[in-house]
Image 1: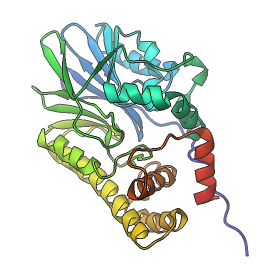
Image 2 (image 1 turned 90 degrees about the vertical axis):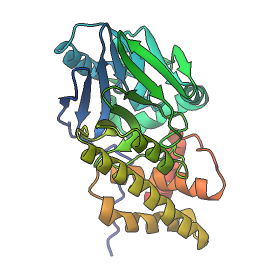
Image 3 (image 1 turned 135 degrees about the vertical axis):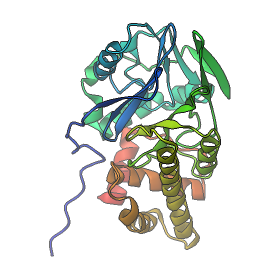
Image 4 (image 1 turned 120 degrees about the horizontal axis):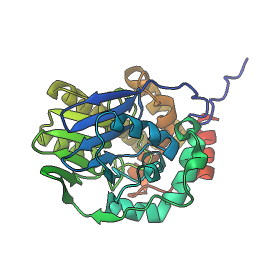
Length: 321
């Protein structure tokens, strides 16, 4: 009887380049998206530009800058980190911003686990770190932090940076244009892309999505997937993300209640979710990390444990080996 081939670790076998779109949401707001790869948001104010999430390396960020320069020559003064993950922050130096803004919770996570996370992410998904040698040594450090909410004024254009609750991480920040009702969600919302939940708070995430819905966005730039340009698309993005998070949590809880170990829970949850979500981008990549974190949360670890390159490998071999 032939043994099934072992799955390649995480997304190391993912080599296919994605087509980039640069979508205009308003005179001030643009979305840089790439078929399920991490998105970048751009806000152009009266006197300056704000970038939300940076791409994974300075070389990759140059393509964002090139597209910004096609629509404005205003200086890029602000970079906002929606959360701490390396793929979101390591391109920051390319923009030469005056300020890098993050929640205090995100700053604390960079202190606690930034180096480990960087090594972990680069090992998992090499294609997302093109020209990784262009990343400066050390971490991307915020120059300005806030708790709860702050406003940045780009001339007369107000950008509200808000922590609406824990979900993808404990530090999640959204950028909100209140006058235009356009939201940049980071990885709190994904569209046709599997939420990565290895550092998540499953119990909190659905309520945080409800808090986003309460703002009634007319358009939303998710962390991955196409820009959502109508209220109907926004509702679909919120519902899809909420459904996935809730389905994983319910399935893991059922396995834990039945006394199953992590391996058994993983196989069961994967089988249950594959028919509904298996076509989403990076489903096979995310599921081992997502179920492991959810199992942790449902059993003994209120807060996510630090992922290291070594822990990644051990987990993958245990569940997929």
